[in-house]
Length: 231
Image 1 (cartoon, rainbow, N blue to C red):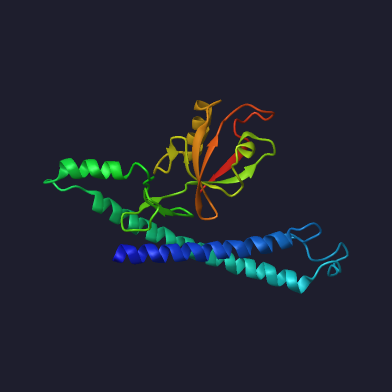
Image 2: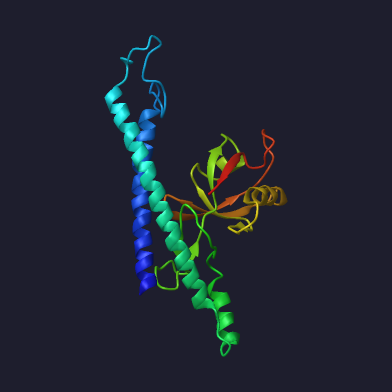
C-alpha cells in the first residue's frame, strides 16, 4: 500500500514538473523570439536609456517568474529522485528470493524483468511500467541517464527521429549504471554499431518512445550528429 501511494505521488509530481517545464518553455520562447532580449540580454540601449522596442516591466516579470520556476523544478526533481530510490529499494527487496524457494522464484523474477529496464540512483525523469504497462505494485523503475541537448540538421539522429530534449533510457546496450563514464559508453556503442540499426528507448514528454538509430558517416565527423548531456 505504501509503495502504491508513493508511486501515485511520484506520478503526480511528474505531471506537476511537466506543467512547470511547459511554462518555462513558453517564457523562454517569448524572451528569445527575434528582437527579444533573451534570458539575460541588456534592457538598455547603447546610450544607457531603457529600450523603447520592448516591454521592460513585462520582461523583468517573466525573468523573475522563470527563476521561481527553475527553483520549483529543482525541488520537484529532488523529491522524485528520493521516491525513485525508495521504490527501487522496495522492488529489489521484493525480488530477493528466500532460501526455500530460490529455485523457481529466482527464475520467475528473472523472467519478469525481461520487458523492463531496472536501474538505481537518481535522474531527472522516471518511467514506471511493467510488461503490460499497468501501474500496479509490480512496476519496474526505468531511469533515463542522458538528454539530447543538440542535434545537427541532416544528421543521422535527426533523420532517424531523435528529437531535442529526448531523454535516453537505453541506447543499444547502454543503460544507467553507477560508476561508469556514460558519455564514453555512448560513443563506444555508436562506433560498435556503425551502419547497424540500433534500438533506442527515449522518454519524450513523459511517454516512452521506441526508436531505431543507425550510426553512420555523413558530412560531419561524428556518427550521430548530436550531443548528449548526462543527467
